[in-house]
Image (tube, rainbow, N blue to C red):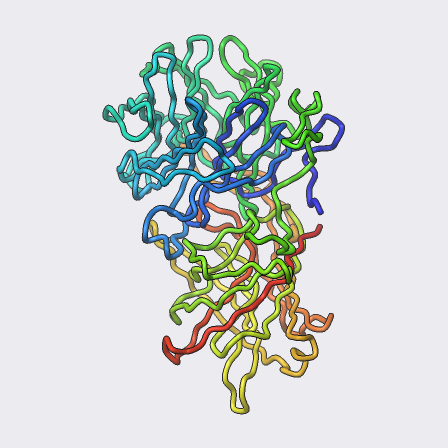
Length: 562
């Protein structure tokens, strides 16, 4: 069941093309195929690869990395990890360059984006460098453009360039600043993407901040500069705040398009597609009003020409109207690509049982001091729509004392509902644990504070239900508000308009009835650079020591609907 149709099925589409938290998207065309990569921070597997034939209908097809490539990511490191990547195709190979702001710039490559990617190589081990983009010139030389993280190095708003070995494994020169936007309208310039057209070098970059910035393009006849600049996309009168980091792609018919993200707060950073035209050697993204050099985001638009000409998929059938997967019946022998773990995972945390159409979640031992957002084995996925309901059917028959399994809403404000098995006076008993709390961030560290309340569960009622419980998770928009985001370089207030404010409501059902007292309602608030996620978990926490037995829970289905 699709929750939101970006493709109207009549050669037109609406933005966003993906209502999902695919932050910092970069994309390329190779033949008739489009490939997109996005940030994944500390979740694993890392760096989702999406595929499309028409720039409107997208599916996740793979991940670049099974794990985030640093040992400390065995634990959740919210806001750290893999930031804005770049994808390129060169000399028969696909490359993804990605930054880890505390470790450096990594590169991985493959001949088949649906297959295995090479072990990442840290080709630029430098603290605070972010947003890499490789560029191979016609003369055989290669370059790497980067930005810097102000949170790490104490300054920002500059773009740098270095010469790179053609195989992408290391740099051949020191990085040099090619554009300095400090104390200008283009403060916080970042995310450079380098292209070449008609003898001009173009660098596409977002500036002015994630939630309330704009798109800048630099151009020069020399890759080292000097560069002149122009704003080519602003929010204008639209409700698309930010329009932030993205990618210029073309079609086989010669059209130009631009993919970018919009930060919608709790919903994360969703993906838009804008038409792109040229005026006096400069791009104009979106639709320009009379007298403007820049464009504004479009809401509805004609699809790219590839779709209008009846693009075919790999089976020779017309392109399917689709969206990234969300619901899961667990009928496969592999975990669906919509799922990511809260940290680097271990293979024995779960077992696919397609003959039973379930996934078995092991009760992974967690330090009793850990808070809900810091459980390593939260199994999560992105919100798939602005408003929706998710139903999860879980069986808790095989929990052991000390085990707890249930559903979670993961954001800066978080919540969970779980069945806990424990040893009681008359044997094993069960209770419903309701958890709510908030994360706060101090530099790169996250600190969670939570409260628990406990509701006894009737063991006979559980047995009558065959130990099957239903978890419900609902997101609903209660209002839209305007909010001042910051003050700019001239101390002017910068506002974001039409911000959705959502309620998240969780409850438990047993034997077809809502368990009285089970409802939890929280304010939706995004995590560290990411939107709210929801999912399931199964952990073991007790005071009986490491010898205590761990059980498991099984999940029968996860179903999303409007």
